[in-house]
Amino acid sequence: MVEDNNPKHIGIIMDGNRRFAKKLMMQPWKGHEWGKKKVEKLLNWCEDLDIKELSLYAFSTKNFNRPKEEFNHIMNLFRDASKDLLNDERLESKQIRIRFCGRIHMFPEDIQKSMHEIMDKTKKHNKYLINFCMAYGGREEIIDAMRAYFKDIEDGNATIKDIDESNFHKYLWVENEPELIIRTSGERRTSDFLTWQGAYSEFFFLDKHWPEFEKEDLKKCIDEYKARDRRFGK
Ligand code: FPP
Image 1: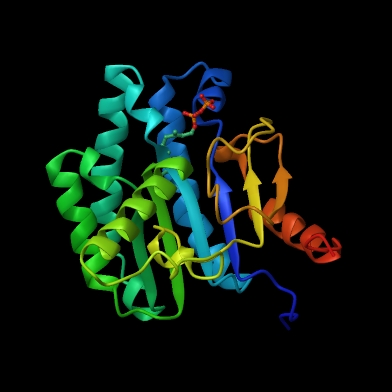
Image 2 (image 1 turned 45 degrees about the vertical axis):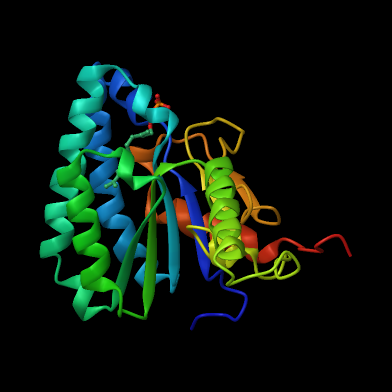
């Protein structure tokens, strides 16, 4: 039985892939491979725990500055992940919509093409929503939203008075606010993830690295979230 105060939307900063690989004396990209496998499992856990929306910080705009060899491995991993997603029958059977949120034009063209294909294929799915935040940065998201708004003004489709706190989200890549945000791997900062949407989110910082994250950890965060008193300044 799922209770009413179950969170609808969870954000996750999937940190610690390289540190996990290092601990096992493996190359950094091995950590990313395990990280990808963990994402695949996460999708099933969310169904079991009745989480309708997930926002996953998979690659920031700053991550484009990773060492060349690691960067190439990550891009190949994204290519594999795109193929897997295109062939994943769960997207249709469970009505999962996928969105790639960020400056996705920064990715190599073939990856961009797959991203658009996946978004197109799932755009009418209406039970679950997964936002892969890629080439993402919260400040960039706000700047791009402002640009889109100014463009609407320029085109005569909006006026300066039209925007406020309640409707700014329609210009953002990720529209909905997550009730909680989890960060793995011991760092206690937000690293520009969901900068606008996370203003009132409950944060959970776990010491485990992302590849070590288990369903029990997710369940514990959700249970603790339910026990927290959210006052929104009142
Ligand atoms: C975070 O750990 C990982 C990344 C920045 C890179 C890529 C993410 C994945 C492969 C997860 C799976 C994604 C998809 C879309 C299937 P880190 O490299 O910052 O680790 P560190 O903090 O130990 O250095």
